[in-house]
Amino acid sequence: MRIIRDFKYVEPQDKGASVAIGNFDGVHLGHQSVIDIARTQGSAISAPLGVLTFEPHPRSYFAPDAPDFRLMSPEARSTRLEKLGVERLYELNFNAALSALTPQEFAKGVIVDGLGLKHIVVGADFRFGKARAGTVEDLVSFGHEYGFGVTIAPLIAAGLGEVSSTSIRTALTEGRPRDAADQLGHWHRIEGPVISGEQRGRELGYPTANMSLDGLHLPKLGVYAVMVDILDGPFAGSYHGAASLGVRPMFGENTPNLETFIFDFSGDLYGTSLSIGLVEFLRPELSFDSLEALIEQMDADCLLAREILAAK
Image 1: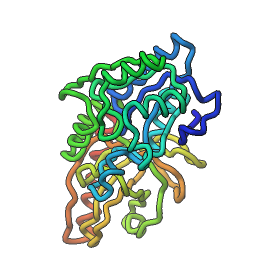
Image 2 (image 1 turned 60 degrees about the vertical axis):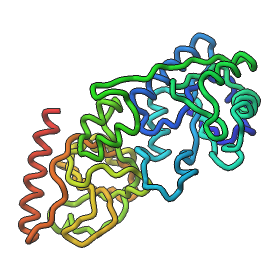
Image 3 (image 1 turned 90 degrees about the vertical axis):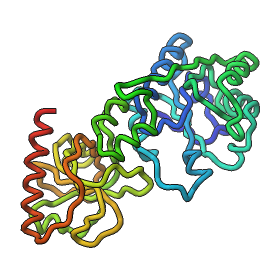
């Protein structure tokens, strides 16, 4: 997959794609449906499959001090999109100049002159241009004027209603990772490098791989049964585990992170990239009267997590 970040400097071989446009936070079933339509339309006109998105997320650009809301990092998003067969990722820098473009300036300057797109697929609620003034009807009109095709994809529903990043965040906040997975089409995953920690888990007989949660929406704090993918290095592969997502109240910490104990594993993972899939919420964060009580609870957590993951 090729990644293009500046619409003003695009190689000829990177133009002419059939693209899905959106923020694609989580790459949920609705996003996947839009991408599949772009794939089908691209095949009909021999155009590569592309995704057009923005970085930083426009919501972060306009409200930089708002609480973290993203379901995945840009790196995790690009990994997921590549797995879906996306050949061109137009990850445009969202800045003052881009945000000031009128809908028509965006259509002419970015879609046509910049990227030379052949076909565009968007959701029915898509808005674009300065102050989100452009509608899907405007996009269709610009397509007729400038010579690119437009398909409006219907919104997708799952068991709990319309699929959206907002409803996925709600499910995660409430400790319902399986409901989130029903809308995502995959386990909600937290990806990133293993960072150094206090090594308290090792002292307790439960060595953990620690990961930062900076910039990400926080699921309900507590202990989870998890799927673990080690993405690189000599131990690359898939494993089961139990993870604590939170602030470690037993030790007076206040910065949330993710600590994962990988079952039946021994090895140094510092600097390695992991992908942790949340499968089931086991219990909230607790404080214990003694380290012995904490270890006893960790034993019980891991036993329960093993049972859940064996039956999933």
